[in-house]
Every structure is written in C-alpha cells, then in structure tokens.
Amino acid sequence: MELKNSATKTATAALNGINSLLGGNKVSRLESENRQLHGEVAELKESIGQMRTDMQKMKESHVAERLRASEQHQREIGNLRRIIDKAKEWFPMLAEFFRIERLCRSVGLSERHTDELLQGKVLVVTGKLHSDEYRRSFAVEKARLQVGREERDGKTVLDLLVDKVPIATWFKEKWEKKIEQKSMFCKINRKIRL
Image 1 (tube, one colour):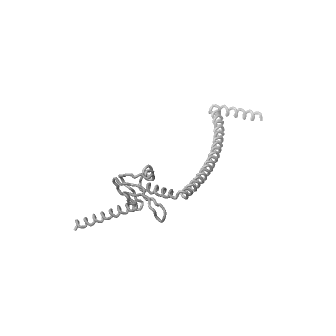
Image 2: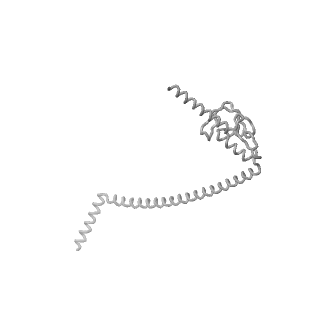
Image 3: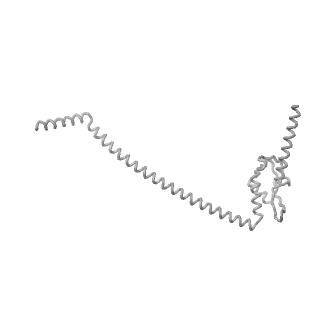
C-alpha cells in the first residue's frame, strides 16, 4: 500500500512537472483571465440594462413633455381664435382685411406689398399674378393694384382691383382671351394643313 501511495505521489508530481513544463501555469492564468472576462461581461450587461432603463425613462419623459407643450399650444391657439373672433365682432371690417390679405398672398404678392395695399396705397406691378381658380399665372405689365371698397347689402366689402377691375373679373377676362387666342391658332393651323 505504501508502494502504491508512493507511486501515486510520484505520478502526481511527475504530472505536475509535465504540466508545468507544458504550460500548466498558462492554463491556470487563462482560466483566471476567463473568469475575470466573464465578470466584466456581466458588469457590462448590467450597465447596458441600466442604460436601457434610463433611455426608456427619458423617452417617456420627452413624450410627456411634448404632450404638455402640444396641449399648451392648443390652448394658446384657442385663446387667439377667441380674441380674433371678438375683434371681428367689434370691428366688422377686420374680417374683410383678413380675406383680402389671404387673396393677395394667393395671387403671389409679398407680405410688404400686401401691407401697402391694405394701407390704401396703389401699387404698380410688373410680373405675374396667380389664379387658383384657373390654376395658372397671368402676366401683368405696369398694372395698378389697389384695394377697393364697395357697399353690398348694407355691408362694406373689399376687393383687390387690377387696373380698377375686380381681380376675379380680370382673371376671367385673361382666361377667355387666352382660350380665344388658342382657338384662333387652331383654326389657322387647320387652314394651313388644307
């Protein structure tokens, strides 16, 4: 039995020696580094989880803040609408001024030109005026634009005038002239082909 124990000890010592020669310390060191890396991975996973939680809280906070801002914005818009409605009630011409302002902007006039027209000035313009109704722009050269007043059914109504003609009528005349020219051009082309 003693011989057997002695043989076991010798074999163990020999294996340790061989292990040591073959890099046993290296294996132990690698196992230690592996355990350390697993610990670092676990810490990083925990940090990532915390970051995700923080990001979710920030996102929820941002959404709540945007909702509060939107609600406040809607309240302010409602207040402004009430003020404008009240001003229109007190000053009936205000609604007409707003309508003409929208019309001037839709035909392509700048804010400055629109303001000047609403102050009663006459503008001489060269360029193009756009018609939403006819979906095109019509050329003007040294046209006199002004805002005119007219009484209809006991109310003062404003209109944008081009050379003293209401702009809707002016656009209609320009459109009809364009159609007439196109028709004449087609007739001439047919005669030439014959």
